Image: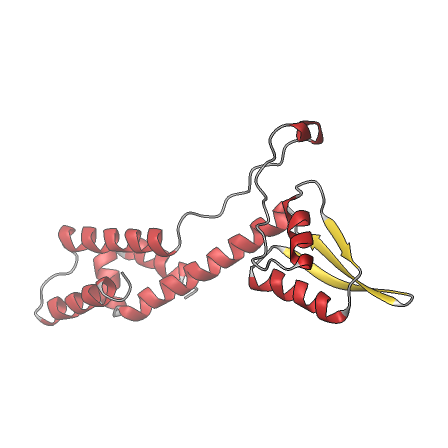
Length: 186
């Protein structure tokens, strides 16, 4: 959509304006607003919502709920143990007493597969323990919201770059133009 429709629309606005065709007609406004709306839906999607709460501990006997953390894609022995921890919706911390290469492999697997956990190495006498903590639902939600808002800002900044400001303002009207500029951080 960004690669075709937005350049087409901004080019159309430039061509119409150069021929003194008014841009604030209903058809141009509706077309632009619909394209922006569809672009927004396709690129951003809906605003992030909180994940559903996990069942109380007493419900453990029922069918297991799906893992809320995903799994790592590697199938080595260490990662299989890690995936068991990630599937367990009742454990939030796991400790692995493994050598540096294996610790590094587990950390990289978590990072590569975008698993919402933190990793830290805990020093104990003669061992280094990898401590993996699942992030809370609130932290995950805040991170998703932050990423969504960052994408939104980038999206609307590129929209503002695509159009001549006076063309966009004429097509959208003062209020919508101000909203779009604000979403772009301008």
